[in-house]
Amino acid sequence: MRQFLGTIQLIVAIALMGLIGQAILHVLAGAGREKNLFYQIIRIIPSPFVKLFRLVTPKAFPDRVIPFATFCGLAAIYLWLAFAIPNTAP
Image 1 (cartoon, rainbow, N blue to C red):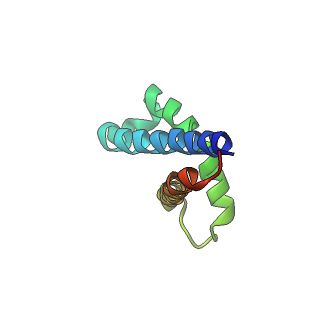
Image 2 (cartoon, one colour):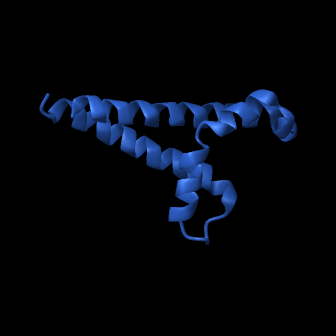
């Protein structure tokens, strides 16, 4: 069970790093970020989670807020897993 939870935590961590990298390139590249090759690559990594959060959130939320909501949700899942893994049986 620990290995399964550890694998889930690893997937969540990779998606979180992709969202952080996307945010950094958003600031650094500015308006030309859509033409940036690295931004396009980093945008692919968390895209399944962003699409999932778009389906879950109400339509009242604008699309520009969804990546931040995804980051907050994945961070909460990561922290929950960080506290849950040591308490599970081996």
